[in-house]
Length: 199
Ligand SMILES: C[S@@+](CC[C@H](N)C(=O)[O-])C[C@H]1O[C@@H](n2cnc3c(N)ncnc32)[C@H](O)[C@@H]1O
Image 1 (cartoon, protein in one colour):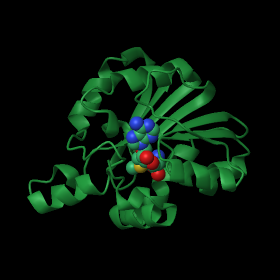
Image 2 (cartoon, protein in one colour):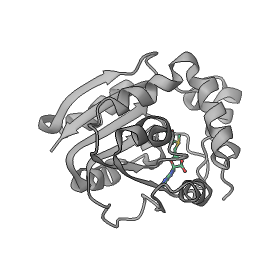
Image 3 (cartoon, helix red, strand yellow):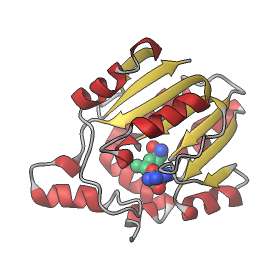
Image 4 (tube, protein in one colour):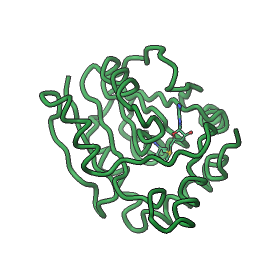
């Protein structure tokens, strides 16, 4: 299965995300970095080109590991001396432990049943699981050309994925983890909703 163009190159990925999020692009990372204390250990699953680490977490001296199924992204990280591993989150192998386990804009890749991967993240976290997930996107647009473009550009190599979360379906998923959910809020611009779960 062919990986979409934006997942082939970190710079292209950043350009596409910048176009999508506009002036709120950087705050989507800044908000998450603000939840992580200096020198914590962080597991970033579906890390992509690890923008969160490179721009924000490196200066907090966190002990970082990024996991992604995309070999190109991980090869590039490792060439920069960043700890990254090729890892398919669809396999049921337990995830490496870390204080904070983070996933940004990737839970939709595991629909229609995101619970198993989410369960593995909870098992791996010593302190918190932080999920930020898009709740508005063009992949589910009623305009068929737009939805086609949205699906094509986020193909991780497993085929086009038509399913996406809405705020209601995300809230429904996290309701199951009720007592663990410490807080939830929208990022500036409202494209993603953040959920912080505490162990
Ligand atoms: C929209 S990008 C998000 C990247 C990064 N978290 C960010 O917010 O900038 C989604 C990422 O999920 C990765 N991905 C998709 N399916 C995966 C899987 N089964 N296992 C691991 N990574 C996966 C893709 O390769 C891609 O890097």
